Image (cartoon, rainbow, N blue to C red):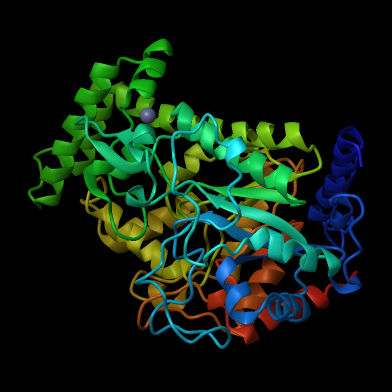
Amino acid sequence: MKETSRRSFLRQFCAAGALALKGMPNLARAPIDSLSAPGKPAPSSASRKKFVGIQIGAISFVDEGIDKALDTVQRLAGVNAVMISVFTYSYGSEGRQQPGQFSDHGLQESNVATFHGGDYATVHPEYYRNVPFGGFRAPDLGSYDVFESVIPKASARGIQTFAWCEDQATPRYVTGFERGAEVDVHGRGTGQMCLNNPYVRNFFAALAEDWIKSYPIDGIMFGSERQGPLDNAIHARYGRSHGPARITCFCGYCTQKARAKGIDVERAKEGYQALEGWVEAAESGVRPGDGNFVTFWRLLLRYPEILAWEQFWSDNQHELYALIYRAAKSIRPSVQVGFHIWHSNSFSPFYRAEQDYWALSQSADFLKPVVYNDCGGPRLAEYIRNVHSTVFRDIPSQELLDWHYGVLNYKGEADLSELPSAGLSAGYVAEETARAVAGVKNQIPIYPGIGINVPTGGGEKKARPADVRAAVRAALASGASGVILSRKYYEMHLANLSAAGDEIRSLPSS
Ligand SMILES: [Zn+2]
């Protein structure tokens, strides 16, 4: 299908979705699979109407066998697209299972201690001439090339293949890493790649070019689970806080670009160092006379460069998204390029404000907002704990959670004491899906990420089949054009995978 006619088709397809939102009995019934590259066999009728993706690591194909793994995900869940984590240094995307949280397939063991990560496809050097990095070929599986091995078999089954790529790397494994590293407010190199650095940008564009030219992939999904210096400084995240080392980026490329945009770099540095001191004082537990929030706000008034630098960082991140999109589409217009939107989008109003769905949709063929509701409970509780240690320290934690429920538009969710064990509801999935669909004005498909057995702590919410089915139902009833089962096949229990498939197969048009 030509690009222009594809766009036209998409508009018609999305108009159907808009009607459905107004009360039509069904949603987005257009055959999304017709967007795939020509020559692909039609998928089974049970999965023709919806995009059913699953994130899967290369190691699953090695441990279980390609045919068995593909057969399992297709037969149980109606999967018609595998999102293979081909470039990642994250154990959450590649690797086996968490110690003590084994699923019921694959090897009943963890390889977290030996996990390395990198590129699980062959690196073709001709695409990396403008890149100073080396050593990023993943050694975990020897010379195994996941695309070369899997794509022919997936294609024969009518399953599309997407490259699932993340923007992080383990510095000690990548030669030349320091040439692309972010620099913090004190001038120290960090373990994060600067998304404004031209070598880093060349690198991700080169990865896309290599994959598209070397393999008949159907698409790329890129993810950046990172945020700017203000959000990092005030610990507005779930999980472990990374501390002030993530007040970035003040590398030469960023400072030069910021000056060209009229941002006072020295004032930004001064403001962030003042903010760093403020955070340390807040964490000491001594309440300033005017309170923690008021003194925080005073800093923003005195140093508007703090907000300017946060926006600058976020703009650079999204510029990289657009660059990857343009690079991929210029090589093969039919390749589908979309973006994984980090779970913090669900918890942090600060991060959410930076994820403008309409702006993101201008350089994307689809978006995957993370709406993992089971682990969403523990994660939201962690977020509240973290942000309560800084700007919201003066507010009781339960009131702070209630405030977030109001601001983020969540209804009927658990109190803080119950939240980690209760998880978030299917109503949250529906709300976040509808918000994304409306945000992109139905111009591109939304494939919410449905969390299945994403690891949680002892006593915290574990996914059951009824939960998974309710989450899939909520997403599809709220305008989603499909789902992406997440975060990796290896940790999903088969009964939960079947539950997702049961819901998809129950759709009237399936
Ligand atoms: Zn930089």
